[in-house]
Image 1: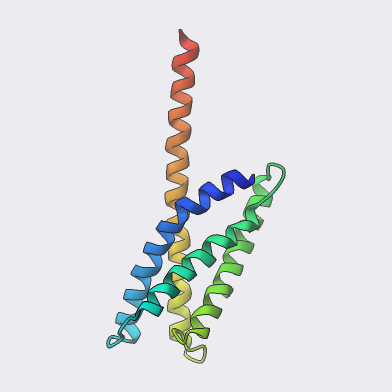
Image 2: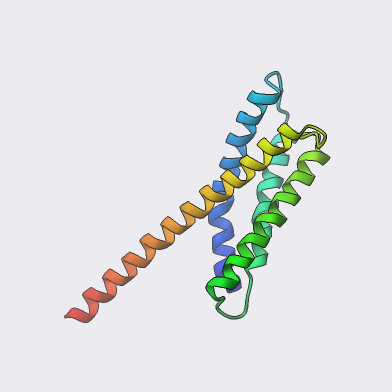
Length: 143
């Protein structure tokens, strides 16, 4: 993936990630900390988590086109790096206690859920764009 494509992908996914993190945080706190109160620092941390999640897209940066196998490997690495990084931030900010397995499992479940949602939304958008380009090409070269 070229840098221009990467930056476009990162910009589009940032807002989806931020929404996913916000919804996940709400549900997580509803399950484990129903009396939680959020401050401006917490909102800033949510935005920082979204930015950190977006920056992990650098793993997909490549000078040449990646094969399907290479892309799959990078997606797996990306998911593992992302999970570890976000779990570290959640621990650092005292959002998740690592000695409570239930919290860690639910937190990682939400990370992976947001990952899948971002992937599906990006894939859907790319598919629609491809269909639009192909239909315009067909129209252009039919005449």
